Length: 259
Image 1 (cartoon, rainbow, N blue to C red):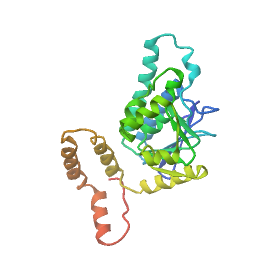
Image 2: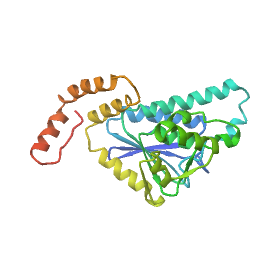
Image 3: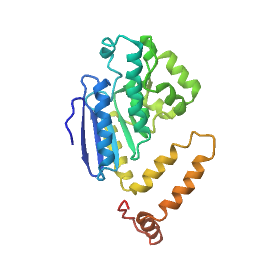
Image 4: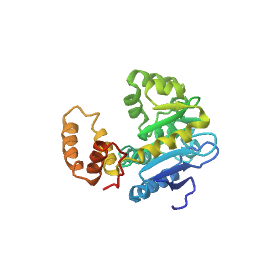
């Protein structure tokens, strides 16, 4: 994989690993967004990679945006462009055709939580702190955190967390629906990797279709159901579907070839 300054990208056993490496707290900076965008393109094109894990090096997943960058920006238009750049990358993650899992330990605050919310699945440490504290700085979230958080935990609770700037624990995050599972902090990465390995056994074609269909869930029309029927017809003709059906009938594990 390519060499980066603010993150690393590796792969092993069909899993791509994106490791945030911006000490001391993996704060999100503009160069990191550019590197993350490039990594996503690389992993999308790499047929060996079926699942991606995003995690942080050191004590934190990502403790927020790089506030020091803000001191070098002198116009509202420049701040807007910073936000739009981050939003484009996170939108790309949310619509990514391969599952992205966030392995969250220590803290995911501000931009760090917005990054985690852009992933398809979030596994967190029981004592991990998660929150959007931007109002504490007289700001608001800029990477679509105000849009994703209400969809995950409801408008009322999201409003409370935004207005108070109070973080919540990983255990509370699971209860609210912000995270999928919580484990002791030292087990989070291994648990996430185990889940990724299980997912990687599935057909890449079927996973891609499933991820596309989930994006329709927020719509109020019937477009999602219509598209589901179309993709059900398409996927039924793949080699993997025929293998999966035969394996079920013959009571064996399927051996998918992503075709």
